[in-house]
Length: 378
Image (cartoon, rainbow, N blue to C red):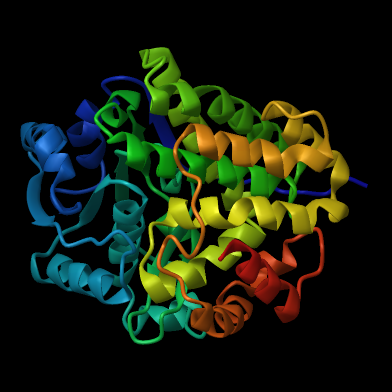
């Protein structure tokens, strides 16, 4: 019997020039915006100025919070919420990549919910309110604009885990493929591979549904055909940028319902302990993770392999390795600074923070299996 649900109350506005609707959309929800962004790339590209001008045109006052790290910290989100309260902001605008959007979500939540955000992350506290949120992605990777997840790292414990609540789904997400075209190739390779991983993992997940399958397969097809030419510079047409950007947004929508599995579950402890780049961590872990999960869903891995240029389930991991080689992302955990002595902690932390991801795997996972995958990827 087929039983499933699908609910995504986000207004996705997709297309070149969508970023210039920031003021129009924000003004529907508030008059004073906390503009959450990162360390400067949005300023250098001119996007920050465009968004500020659009907000000003619509009469929205702006307060900027630009302290977001590549792996946003719980303490950073708390600082942003404190500024939003102090400044009496009534709406949050997130302008940046996945880290910025996740931090913006947490800021919007913490502004209206008291207490330690980690308590909400682990479900010991609950809250169903957040300031209205407008998201403007500047990287085609996490798909955070399409779900209610906000991944944060607790600097005191190293736990990297997501706050999950429908209250942080954006009231509007302005997805503009033209905003992606200034990404450095190394960054593009990393975020684009993250987008691909979202849909590949969700497709083989236990929580997959007929609707998530349709979106996941389309996203894998789009990412697989566009990522290599964009990174290598062989095709940088706007149509190709649109394909990868759409793949990223679809991937975010897919994991909002079907979730992710082993590679993401194992990457979070790695970037939690060593602050590595998320997409690079996934590159080190994904092929080996696929090989472990293959026996649980060979038909689905065969479908993924075909979309990646392979010939069957057995070479799906190798098809991913070939793609990683072509985009210059063939790395090991050792290359990223992970030490053998880190593996016991990462294994135990994975069992702690990624229990949901592990339960979503088509093959039952235990600590010994997780440790072995870490060692293979070192």
